[in-house]
Structure formats: C-alpha cells, structure tokens
Amino acid sequence: MSGKGTAAGPGSRPGRVDVNIGAGFEAVFLEPGGQAVQQRWADAALAVAFEDLDPVSAFPVVPGRRWGPGLWWSATTGRHVAAGSNAMRTQLMALDRDPQVTGMAGRPVRLLWRDRQGRVRSWVPQLFARYADGTALLADCPGHLGTGGERALKAAQAVAAACTDIGWSYQRLAPLDEVVAANLKWLAGYRHPRNQGRPGLMAAVLEAFARPRPLLEGAEVAGDPIEVLPAVFHALWHHTLTTTLKTPLHERAIVHPGSLDEGSGTAPAETLHNDAGDGRGEKGHCAPAAASPASQAPCGGAGVRRGEAV
Image 1 (cartoon, helix red, strand yellow):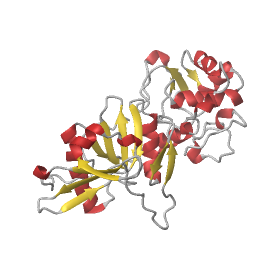
Image 2 (cartoon, helix red, strand yellow; image 1 turned 60 degrees about the horizontal axis):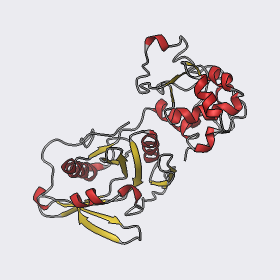
Image 3 (tube, rainbow, N blue to C red; image 1 turned 90 degrees about the horizontal axis):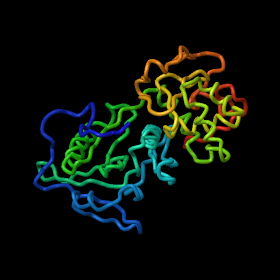
Image 4 (cartoon, rainbow, N blue to C red; image 1 turned 120 degrees about the horizontal axis):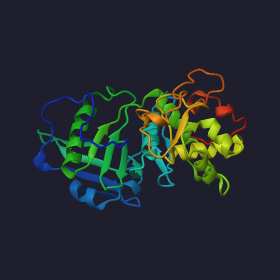
C-alpha cells in the first residue's frame, strides 16, 4: 500500500476548508534532545527528518479499551515505532511491508493553523511515513472511518491542505480487509532477519520456488519444513516471494517468485495452479496468527516457531 493521495478520506465534508490560508501552517516537534521547537510548516517539512523523532505528545490511554499504546518493531528501520491503538499497529504493519516506505514514526509533529475566525487550531496526526522519493504521508488510523467526530473531520481537511501545499499526502486510512490483515499479521511474525535461517537456507528456498508451486510442496523441496517454513514466511514478508493475500494462507497457497499483485491475486495464466485460492476451512490449512493459538503449527510443519507480530 503506497498511501499516496491528497484526500482526507471518506467522511470528509465537501466545501471550503476552514483555514485562514494566508496565516499558513506551523509545525511543533521535539528535537532529539527533547526540546520543543515551533517552525513554519513548509520549512520544517523540508529540513526535519520526522521519521527519526519521538512523539510530540503521548498517545492517550483510554480506560476499558482492550488495546492501548505500545511499540511496533519495524523491519524497515530496525527500530521501534510508537503506536496508539490496534488499528494504528495494523496500518504500521502494512506500511512496514511497503517497499517504498523508508521510515516511520508515531505522532512526531503537531500542526497549528488559524481558522477563518482567527482562532488557533491544532492537530497531531497519528502516523508519519517517509517514501523512497522523499515525499511523506501523514495519517490517522480510525478503527472505523466515520469515527472521530466533527473536530477530527475538520482537522483532516486542514492537514490535507497543509500536505498538499508541500507535495505530501494526508489520509484517514481505511481499516484493512480482515483476511488481508490476518495474513499480514502472520507474516509479520517472521519479519525479523533471524528467520532467514542458517547460511544457504534462503538460497535453497528461492531455488525451490523458482517456479510457482504450493507453499508446503516448495518447503519440502528446500528441506525439512520445520526449518524451512520460517524462511519462506520471511521471504513472503519481504516480497522476495509472493502470494495472494486475499484468501487465507494455507499449505496449498501458490507461492511465486518475482512480482505478483497481492491485492488482486493476479498472475500470468500459465503460472496458476488449480489449487490456488482453495483451502478455506480445510484440515491442515495455514491459519493466520490472528486466528490461531500460538501453539498451532502452520502449514503442516509441526513445531515451527512463530515470531511475535508486535
């Protein structure tokens, strides 16, 4: 998912943005030493590496919620990223796997502006992501796109305008499809480099899947599935291998070398296997981590170790 675009997302109201454009936008952020700095937004966007900064303000703790603030270990940067909710962690997970994303941060900047009545307004987007081309995404991660109320929707319009001014984008990110999210959570458990395995194992895995074939079949060609499957999942996380994520991962899911549109699950017709997409509810299917006990072994590989998707 690239996240590129300038719309504030579904739920935004049409019409004029309630911002005094002439007053411009200001940015507030914390320097590495913890000192708060306020700077013109256009200047800060050009000069500041927001992906390296701590949150400008802490994520709120809401009593009674099942999920609270925490940290996501990023395979992209090798560092932790602050997350304020389960919905945000899911979006961080998707961005962490996006090959165009080079850095991420939670709440690194507060935007200030004046409305048309001259009143100072502010908003802290939940998420920042830097892309390889130098542009960036500011985003909020509501559990449902309609949540947040009038203030959030007006702020979304203002932040979208601020981002458009400098060639960035802002989005209220839609929750991921449940099956795609569950598959990503499973693969995220293997994102750490340790899951590449012993020297030479990844080369054997890539050779086994030099042509499209069922997941478990390829793992058995490469060696003992107990050892091989973590490396296969690691390669799927990093796009070294690909498969459709629109259907639940299972032992007969077709794994491809090279490029595959995972969102649509499309591939050249001659590469498709007649088992592709089967396996919903089948005995022995590869159950995503979100739907499986930690002790359940995926894809027929009893005892395969699963990493933590946190």
